[in-house]
Each structure stands twice: as C-alpha cells, then as structure tokens.
Image: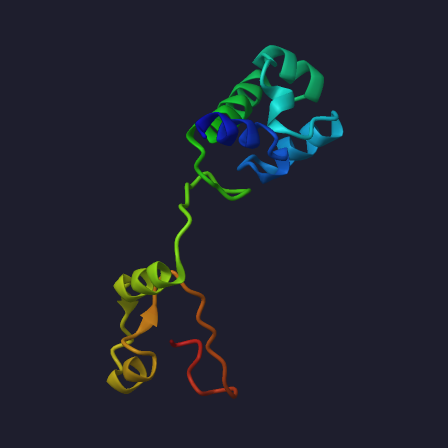
Length: 134
C-alpha cells in the first residue's frame, strides 16, 4: 500500500505543491508537470534549466521530495501542513478558538463572545455609527 501511495504522489501535478508562484510558473514553462519528472534532477541542473537560483532549486526539490515521502497534504502557496479532517473536527476546533472582546457586553453577546479569531468578520453600517472605532 505504501508503494502505491508513493507512486500516486509522484504523479501529482507540480501546481499542487506549496511552491512560490514564480517558481511554479518557471517549472511549468520549462515543461515540468509532475513530481516524477523532478525525481532524478539535481539542484544545479534544475537551476540552469528553469532559470532559478541554486538555492531556490534545492528548496523546490526538498519540498517536492518531502511532500511525496511524508504523504502529508499541503496547499499551494503555503508551507504550513494541514491534515484532512471531518466537519465535526472543524466545528470542535472552531469552538476552541478565542475571541477579541470589544468591551461592549451587548456587542460581544451579539457576536457570540466577541470578534472571533481566525475568521474574517465584516462590520458594515450607515455612516457615523462607529465602524471605524470598532
């Protein structure tokens, strides 16, 4: 089973790896599409072929190899690992997040304890109602 997982990861499109957009574009422009195509490439070769620094080439290869070997899903544009989880786990995680209190108990009650962390909260209203002060 592990061998099949590894083979699948090697067929993964390069655009799905957490690489910088500039490096991703250069890899695709140079004709690279999957992780498998970079398996035997050396950093110096990749640097010349793609037109990136040797440090960027080394970092790119390390990211791709780490992603394929550890089989941890990641999201493009970020280096932070995120595991797959259920909706229940997300809900439980949401309940453990804190709030920024507004020191207005009525507003905090309306917001369910304050302005929630790790979320986007839009404050809207007519001119002059205090949105900026919030």
